[in-house]
Amino acid sequence: MGFAPEYVESMWLMLQQDKPDDYVISTGETHSVKEFAQKAFEVVGLDWQKYVVVDERFLRPLDVDRLEGDCTKARAKLGWEPRSSSISWWRSWSRRTSAVGRDAKKARPSRGMPRAIPAKPGY
Image 1 (cartoon, helix red, strand yellow):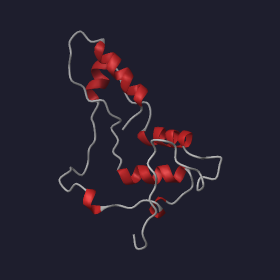
Image 2: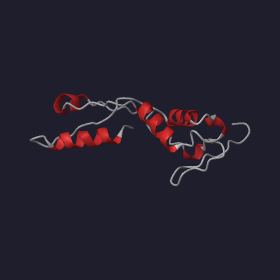
Image 3: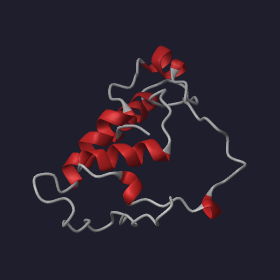
Image 4: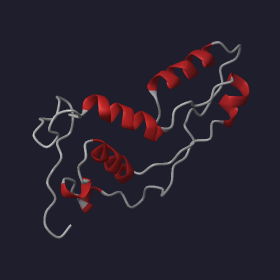
């Protein structure tokens, strides 16, 4: 995951090249969905474990354990590099779209935002 304007900049740089080529555009970071959930709930002062339930039926056992992009070629040929960390833009986005400044527990999620599901006892 990364910051969209930085990806758009990389696309523009690709289009400026004399010959088309393939590039990996990435932050070079790895983060789990769990980590993003923790950070998002942290922004609004809530314990993510009280609201998120993991349904084992939706886990994909054949997925690779770690995905990390290497943007070395984009750095060398395009002069492009990520300027924002995934976590910093995620926190920024969470703050803008959350109910910070109001009572987050009573706030209604905005349209298009997933609703948190209260965890069942024992999770």
